[in-house]
Length: 243
Image (cartoon, rainbow, N blue to C red):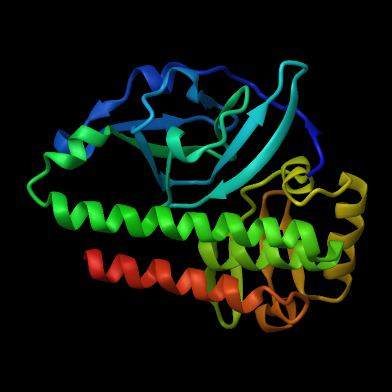
């Protein structure tokens, strides 16, 4: 993977992290500003974070301020320190204004519906592991265009709102985030995005708003499209079962 420059704007334990609200056995709510970080160095290994709103990146910042995006997390995803690589500066960054719930492991174990909750959490963690493996496959074997198509398909399915065959969403990642995550040069990424716009597969009506105009055509550009679609389907089935 390539290494991009860090764009950190706040350190671990910012104001939002210190003023979280307790929600009984459901954990502590953390409202994060864009680019606010939670660094894992002081976290208990079994402590979980669940994304409630927005988009979070799991990333590492090396001592010389180089940053690597490792995984993109969407609402419903769960992540813990124990499931993260033991590298310097590993933590979570809010790609956009986001909300997390901090879930200590012992809170889940003692919940009234502990067995059901634990099964649901295990399924969520397994789904995230599958997405991480799929991302490694994309970086290792796909062309630059295929990588971009895979990520845009993922964002559309996990964040988008379907409107008459198109998917509209707030673009959760900056150009540098996307380039870093896809192991691409930012200029190469810009050219690929422009090519997709010229082919009318995507549109960017505003700087932070994106529309996938033809999801089927976009998915046809990547051999991993069906896998992404299957993973999205597993999330929806899990949410239905939990409800």
